[in-house]
Every structure is written in structure tokens, then in C-alpha cells.
Image (cartoon, rainbow, N blue to C red; front, side, top):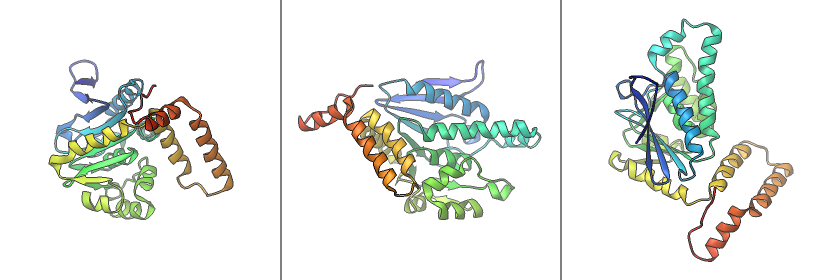
Length: 269
């Protein structure tokens, strides 16, 4: 297992575990329920950059050690933020916004493995992933308004992941959202018993790893492009041009050939 941490004797904030085609990124601040601080955010970005260049890693899984997935921002950090200059406070917020955008636009699929609490920024991390698999006991919550804050940087991803109407409810009330209900409203893709959580995540990872890596990256960009876009002839022409371009590529030719020959595709790149 690889670890990424600050230099010196400080604790390891992130562990990277390679399981076949998937890299599992374990948030490792269990004593603080994996609360996010600036160091952990920077380490996550570094891990994404490192793993993007590893051809054998096709899928990333974001998970948390201890009793929670991620309980949100580090409260001690928030107390410091109240005394920061406006410029420093904005820089801290921009750092988290960049992390979420990096996740949402990452070329490889991201799976959120959620157990325990996924609150505030932790719920935002899950929303920025492509798939969310949650244990039955998991809970989501947006408590920001109750302490005079707003779910600012995570709001675009929440609205995309659960819809505006549901986002309004949970952002304004601050009530807890149980995993089963989160699945019912479409925020969570799969909800399973805690004992089955890893197995279900691994099954998703194996399914994703069967697809062409370029096709996955292009599909993610395509879905981001068409989400909310008006249905116009221009959009139709744009999507048709994309298909024509992809169809002429080496990956599509290999995929079609392998299907006709009834064998597994030999992906490259």
C-alpha cells in the first residue's frame, strides 16, 4: 500500500491501495472522521495527478478509514478561517473548488465508497464522483445553514447529482438524509449492507475496467456537455460529429473487432 503524507513525522492523511484495475484512495484522519483540511486536499490532487498517468489503473475509489467517509471541513480550520483576511479565506475556498472540479472532470471513473457520515464537504466529495455506493447505515447531511454558512463550492455538484428540488430541501433544512432515501431520490446509485460494501464497489470497478479508457473519458465529457443543454440541431450535429470521430479511432475499431471475434478487447493507452 502506498501512502501520501506531509514530510516529517506527521500522520499519513491518505493511503493508496491498488486492487487490480482500481486504486482505492483512503482518507486517513479517522480520529477526526476524515475531516478535510488544506493538506489533505492538496494530497488528493497530487494522488489524482499521479494515478492519471498509470495505464493499469482504470478506476479510482474514494473511501474513508474509521467510522465515517468524511464529516466535512475541519472545524479547527473553520475557526481559523473566521480570522483570516478576505483574500486568504477566498484562496482556501478556491482550493476546495479546484479539487471538486478536478474530480468531476477526471478522465477515469471515480466511485465514492460511503459509510458512516458524509456531511457538508464530505457529501460534496461524493457528489463530485461518478458513482456513489453507500452502506445502509450511511448518512448524508448539509448542516451549513444551521451554523450560518452556505454549501457554496459543493452546490453545483449537489444540484447535478440530486436535482434542484431535493438540493433545496436538504441544503435549507439541514436534515439528515439516510442512505436508502438517498438511493430512492437518485443521489446514491447502490445501497447495500455494510458487509457487502467493498464487494459491490469492486464489482462496479470491474465493470468499468472492461470499457475502453478513451471511451470512458469521452463519455464523461459528453455527459457534462449535454447535461442541461437545450435540444437543438446544433447539439445534434455536435454529438454526431463526436461519434464519427470516435468511430474512426483505433479504440473503437479494436472494441468492435473484439466483439465480432468474441474475445476481450486489448485496450491501449
